[in-house]
Amino acid sequence: TAKHRVFQFLDGSILPDDKLIAIALDDAYFLGVLSSRAHIVWALAAGATLEDRPVYNKTSCFDAFPFPSATPAQQAGIRNLAEQIDAHRKRVLTAHDELTLTGLYNVLEKLKAGATLTAKEKTIHDLGLVAVLKQLHEELDVAVLDAYGWHDRTDEQTLLARLVALNGE
Image (cartoon, rainbow, N blue to C red; front, side, top):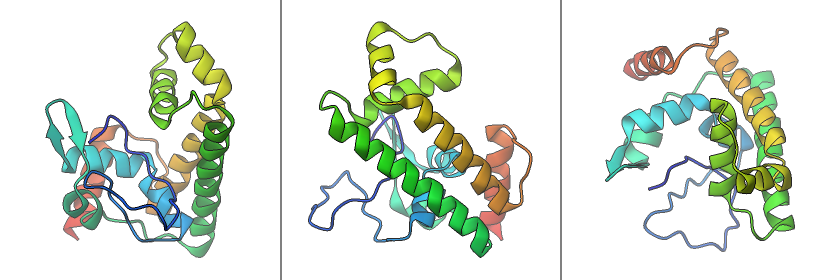
């Protein structure tokens, strides 16, 4: 139950609580697809809500999600971008105790929307190198859509309709 869908590799010693969904995959290709705009659009539509917050349900958000039939080269590209995103986030969070994943993604969403950042958000932007995170996510989104064979950068409604059609297949 959170504002953002954030996927990352976790150490095997971490014991997830009831609100942390653990997906036992060690291939960064899957991390990349799950971190993409395509999966986020799917998860927000397929998941539930608690008050005003989206809830990620494994059954409807993960199990029913139609992964792309990516070529080995496409998988390698997605894998590389996912590893860069995971490493970047861990690097900036380790370097700055005051940063959080939620804070990084709040600023990222404001950047995507073209909104003005507050002084606190500018600090998060600078310390967290959020412009780098934004660029990596944009490249990941293009790579994942290409893996689906969708070379246009469509709106969320059309993207969701395409994913639903794939799920139906």
